[in-house]
Length: 305
Length: 223
Image 1 (cartoon, rainbow over the protein chains, first blue to last red):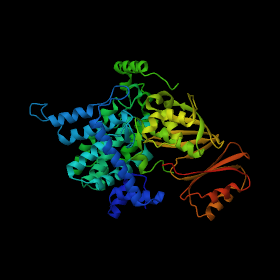
Image 2 (cartoon, rainbow over the protein chains, first blue to last red):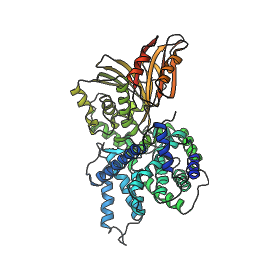
Image 3 (spheres, helix red, strand yellow):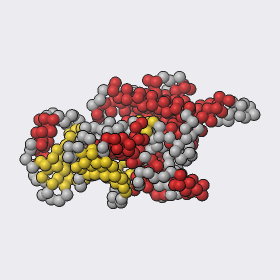
Image 4 (cartoon, rainbow over the protein chains, first blue to last red):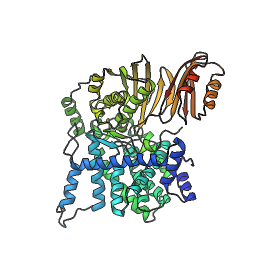
């Protein structure tokens, strides 16, 4: 087992030993906590299973969140994909994989908003991005569940380093820390799934995180609903694009480790009203305030606080 | 010590909507139950900061109670935890208060257990369902719940740590992380030891039998 604190170290360990990123993190986890490979792989397989269930549930449920603000958008996309007659040419503009990934991400976030079961990845607010991207990439490149489980380990390794050197919490670092991190994790894992190298994984994650720097966390009425569901849809598009750019050989001039530190610094300098307090940004718009007022009247407080 | 492991990033499996305000809160509840073992009979929950501000919409109170009942963050019954508590005879009071210079997502739980255990636990939710217990009964601690953990309150005097750790060494228990804090010189101190190995009842008894050890508690990893 070898220790790592940076993406650079992680990639170097993988390259030096001719291993995948997932193999490095798996061995680290085995060494640190004294658990067997089989136990760890099965735990990750359980996560994959719940991710899949949450996608399916979101695509089929008619439920709306308690606030009534969220629910049913993933179903709309599926209907549009299956109908295929919405435009002059009979095709949707952004194409198959992009829309399928966004649809799956929204499905998971809608289930989350309805207090359904999901896998935090790295958080609940950002939970749609990783399954959205990975299930779609697997479909595109013909990867199986074993590959997907390994890709989830790689995503986890990138997330651990982000948490160690910046943050994955919207309250601490804004939305860039949640869906930005989720998209970076998904890009690195997606490259591996598609057969890219550890180095390309790091470049893909750097590209996507750079493009999501500065994104604030401004949830309407403080709920993990607006704009979280559609931000996850957009994050999948960012990740898919970064995966293909990296596979094409494009590199990020600023290394991922430095992008992560920059993300942390931006998060710390972000005004408190833009860090999950529902005080600024979209949460402070007239429409958001009106929603907040309506909810305060509609949702009584039987629990006494 | 690392703040998380790979399953703190990919995971937990949880009931939505918020990993910090729902899953993290459930984990704080579960860790409190591990610190005060057995069925809790009453719990006074104090929410601070963002937990107090936005906790209701995120089910923070439901999750804390679910954790105290021993439920996993992914258990569907989390949504009905207040009803479950009522049926289980667990008396719940929920309030909010400024707990001072702590993380915005912090809760304090004053718990009385069925064996007469009384404890006050403060925990913070760090994001992604990861939490840290920062205070037990007024002593500053740092418990992430990923390891087998030994919590010892003892006299603040020379030689205590060497006597404690020699018992661990004899039992072949390796220390991963360790921290000692005290309220004032020469009074009571609290030592938290995270270990790579299970803390057996024999080892627990051996440490408990040491002179000037007031109380000992083994907290298993909370998964």
